[in-house]
Structure formats: C-alpha cells, structure tokens
Image 1 (cartoon, rainbow, N blue to C red):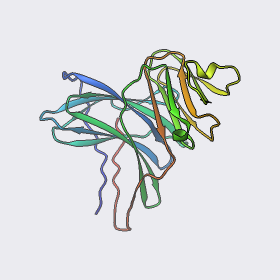
Image 2: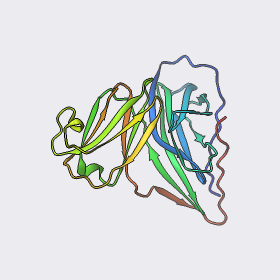
Image 3: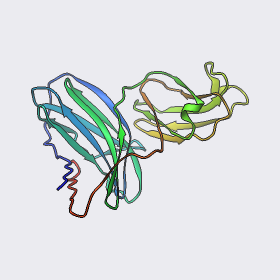
Length: 234
C-alpha cells in the first residue's frame, strides 16, 4: 500500500530561536488541486516554524500560524482554501537555524498525482530586473509585493536596457498596480526586443520568479493503492 501523508503539526505559542524569513511564491489551490509546504528539521531540537499564507489579492488564508517540527523529521502543511475555482497564493515562512522549507503544487487527475515544485526565495530590494527575452518567452513571470506599500510594476521588451527603459517614448509596456501582500502572474508571449525588463515604482520587498508550463513529477496509483491526504492545517 502506498501512503502519502500530510501531517498535521501541533500549534505552539512561541519560539525563542533566531529565525530567518523566506518566501514561497506561486502556490495554488482549487478543485482537485492544493499546495504543500514541506518543513525539514535537520537539528537536534524541536523547532517552531511560523507560516503565513496570502491569496493573490493579499488577503490571508487561515493556516497555522505556528507549528513545531520534531528533530530529524520532515512534515507537510497542506494549503487548501476549499475553493470551487483555481486560485493562487503564496507563503511567508519564518525558519529557525537548521530548518528548511519548500513548496509543491499538487494536482490530482484520476489515479495520477502531479507535483510542481516551488522553491523558497529571499526578498529583493532591486527596482528593476533585466532578462534575455529568449529566456522568458512562453513562460510565466511572477511578481510578489511583500512590502507594506503598493507598487506599480511595468513590463516591457527593448533592444537596449538603460534605466527607465520602459518609460522611453514609443516603448510598448504593460503596467499593473500590486498592493501589499499581493501577487501577479503574467504570461510572456513572443517578444520583439532583445531584453525583457521588469520595473517597480516602490522597490523594497519583492520576489520575482519565472515558471514554465511544462509537466510536473507524476505518480500513478494502481487500484489497490490508497492516498491519505490528511486535513488542511487549522
């Protein structure tokens, strides 16, 4: 029997160890779709982990917020907003020394479970990012504003990428307002310029990530197998 367990972790009130804050972008949930935040404690003591999850529009999801992970153990926290429609979200994770985290989006189709990994990120204070157009065409560009203030995010394709390249007269650009704790995903189609530029009007606390639309890791279960998904974290 093949068993996949999503472990419920007992909430704790507080943790004393120094922590570092990391971000897991582009999680999602919906019909036959959910996300997993996997915690791993490589240390010798039980450690608290604080997890906050926000929808794409910046509103919080009721997850956690604080869990304990036993020494030498791994555990999964399931993120599932019980929505009838596909929705994106992201996680802020406060990790003590020796504790790691990563995310997965899991999609169930019939007897097949497909995993799409989501790695952890640090925040960037950069006001702009320049990428070769050939690297981003046909992919999803994801922007997360983890700051307390809104920002205007501009995307453009240019042959040269000086500062304020997107503001140059005649440049075609797409511009969006991204509020505090909000995220944005843009499908990048065929580009005419050599470079793809992303600019933020209020730099300070952002995550920029690139995802493709390729297949994930698929597990297929036979008729005698069972899948135990547990329950979403309270």
